[in-house]
Image (cartoon, rainbow, N blue to C red; front, top):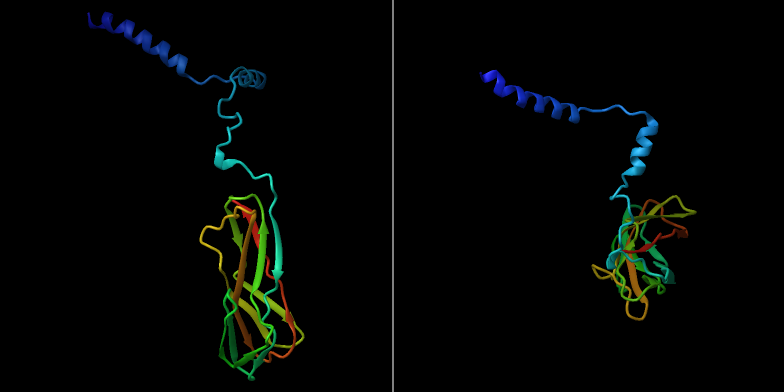
Length: 185
């Protein structure tokens, strides 16, 4: 008697299992199935106000180069000349004086007023010259705010300095470049 009552339930369970079983379709059938069912996630995402890219391209102008000028190096050993973004220099080790033309670098960025930007400077810059000494600029620092933004006049200016490290026989003229990358956020 119990068998008659379970029979209809078993038939419904077998039919449901058959509908859920995977079906192998030829490639043409898959292509037609994908055309028939449009992808709701593939459409263009509407841009939010924060996603709009400014129409004005960013321009970077170097106003003054970072210049340590002449450093009097007292011989063998190491020396460090630190220049802050406001132009104050400090010497430690075997350095005793800098030239009168030592100055921080200054940069002017032009762009879309009010837009935030990211400014990337290298951590270290190697300087190359004629002598056998090793010179590099470490710890490049700026006077940029924590979250830089193009001003209402379409400009953002900043100054930068760093730590000049000298070791070995440091005679000669040394040159290098500081790569600055600026982009809208």
